[in-house]
Length: 362
Ligand SMILES: *Cc1c(COP(=O)(O)O)cnc(C)c1O
Image (cartoon, rainbow, N blue to C red; front, side, top):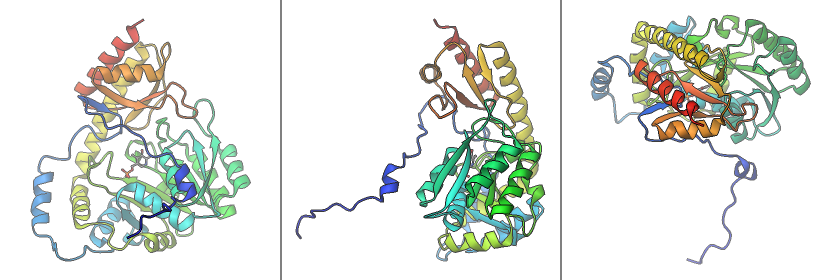
């Protein structure tokens, strides 16, 4: 064989995409990726093992994931033909971008927000345009509607509550976005990864002809980040479109089984949400006593900014003390900010103790 002389080129737009960076450091207290601090109910793993022992391993899994979709639909108060499930809500978002974005099309985000919205769109060749939030990270209905009318994006993203700021979007903002989307043929995607913590859900605005999709995940409140499972609820014509771009049998039997099993534990999930919300209140109260600015959160994390010290420096010093938070200090619009996930009471105390020490250094 002759030596190859020309190396295949990566797609030029892909070559320009910065990868996804969230260090997985091996420290004692990991509060950086908004996972649930508690595992699923004690017998979850054992029961899943039993169910999987009897799986039809030699057969492809149910391509339609009918049982899972039916159960999700019951919990969401809708029907299975309005639900699409995939490997994490990230794959749901990717399918949306493949079906409604692509070359020559535009997606609109309001920054700062979840970086993967823009990132996933770019991977599918979709152009991304961003509009800024106000200083306090809120949006107002008129600004949102005007931006949608001006850009005429194929896809518009909102995140309720928003990551990494923790703020819930108001109903007025989502309604204004939806009306503006309806006028220009844009699909409104409301990412509700933290929806169980929010005062309201955009799913209330859904309808067969409403261009609205709400995405949710098992990675956070469901204590199942290790299983990659997310879904969307949307009109039937969106479901048909994303089914076309999803790979056949993309959702394996383990994931489908784990999802169905998890949905037997809605009450436990609700109780976890209450415990986390209480702990979030405790962290926010401690922030009030420290020299940090923080933003009111409707999720399982809190965005904060050390006043007197550089965020990146505080982040490193926390790591040195065995506490990992998310370093957002260099993200556009988040100068000097860090984001802490609400952990167990013990982890939260460890975090506050470490932060207090770090802030006292001169
Ligand atoms: C964590 C998170 C997700 C979850 O993605 P998965 O692929 O389901 O793990 C989606 N959206 C937002 C805003 C998130 O913060």
